[in-house]
Amino acid sequence: MMQHAYHVLNTVFGYDEFRAPQDQVIEAVLKGQDVFVLMPTGGGKSLCYQIPSLVRPGVGIVISPLIALMQDQVSALTQAGVRAACMNSSMSSEHNYQVEQQALRGELDMIYIAPERLTLQRTIDWLSRCQLALFAIDEAHCVSQWGHDFRSDYLQLSLLQHTFPSVPRIALTATADAKTRQEIIERLGLDKGPVFVSGFDRPNIQYRITQKNNPKQQLLNLLKTEHWGHAGVVYCLSRKKVEATAAWLSEQGVNALPYHAGLDKGVRHQNQHKFLHEDGIVMVATVAFGMGIDKPDVRFVAHLDLPKSIEGYYQETGRAGRDGEPATAWMAYGLEDVIKLKQMMAGSTANEQFKRIEQQKLNGMLGLAELTGCRRQMLMGYFGDELAQPCGNCDNCLTPVETWDGTDAARKALSCVYRTEQRFGVGHLISVLRGKVTDKVKQFNHQKVSTFGIGEDIHDAQWRSVFRQLVALGYLNVNYDYGQLYLSDTSRAILRGEKSLLLRVDTKQVKNSASGSKNSKAHNIADEDLELWDALRAKRKQLATDQGIPPFMIFHDATLLEILTTKPNSLDLFSSIGGVGQKKLDKYAEEFMAVLQTFHS
Image: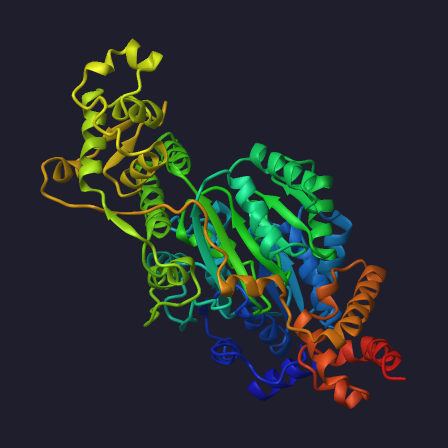
């Protein structure tokens, strides 16, 4: 069967070799085993279930929470000659009925279906009458309460092992720490099958986290110096901020669009369509956007607010550079992020166990933001992976962080919180420390407390940095009603002089590194080939527009680059290019060779 799998890999998808551990995963599924797969975004998870669906008899059922993207996934498979379809609530009952009948007649290789539809008794009855190749549970972290994107519908997927015991199941995710992995395996009953954990490192992504200092302007500076005209995603925490940021970027000449769950469905669909189909679109979005987006040439992902967990951060930043070319993961982070997220979590109506999980995950994310060492090493370590040496491609490696002995400043800050009765926010506390006689200071008579004016030697921005780090490190807690700060139990060690504290020196602006500047030109194309490159891209765009699909579904940039460099002049030579299967060879080779011919005639 593996021989057949290699044949499908070559003739359908246009590749000669699997990436490890794709071949091992596929072999296990072909043998009928249940499998759990943890593989980073862009690592090739989809082939792990697509190829077994084509090799095993019957239809492969892919369970995905991404209703908005199912049709795009089906379109990409159809381009490769795969008989694929999707069924979800956005489709007509007539369409869904036709798909059911096609499956019963054995006319489909793969069907994408939403979890809430799969668990309907009507669906179970229909599937019981079909010949099934496998069940693929995509975005499997949704089953875990330890995961960052828990979906209650996924809990019911355990029914598959009882209802269809002879049909192999493969669960896949890009982000799950050890505890999340274990819960997924237990909830889905995958404990008897092999577990495949691929390396988490995405060496082409440069991770950078900077302190907020007019974040919109900082973002614009990043775009102007490194990513002008590139496709990218900007994440914001609130819908209001998404719309305001997209509007402001548009005013600055950036081709920016908003995306969040509160927008009209038609507008959301239109904006997503533009992002996928056009070049150089910057999508400003909440985390409602991005799961399942297969656009390979996203050159940057920016966060204007702190994500709630390392898993969320890793998954969101992983949407950059899926083509393996240099990409940037940039984030601006400040004290207000810490306070806002801690308030949100403290005020949540979730049960105490879930709130505890959320708090632990936020603390991990804060640790990454405040880190003075290699960010990639910490990211890898969080997921149980190991990077032996600092990466050399994150901000802390490229520009090592300065630290200072903040013990005395921390003691003053904590004392000031205590002396003002632990019921004030950062702005007022800084006024007291710096000896400013504001109306509020006079109102509460705080010019008479012992900490008034003891921090005159430290400027406002540095005090904000001190308070941010004290909250991030857990020495100060946040009241969720009004954002007042109060002491945690761990603060006593600092106040009593039993513990010293090294704090990071915040830089006003992160310098553009030599490595970062490479991103301004994603592909190293020789000047004499630029005109041909543009012509090949124009042909791809025209073919895609004619069919109403994104250009990358015709050929990824990596395939187009190989066409540019090898300049094939026969079908045999064209077929040897990576990403060109038989269907695409028949459909597109002559079109692209005609473009090559015009430049060599």
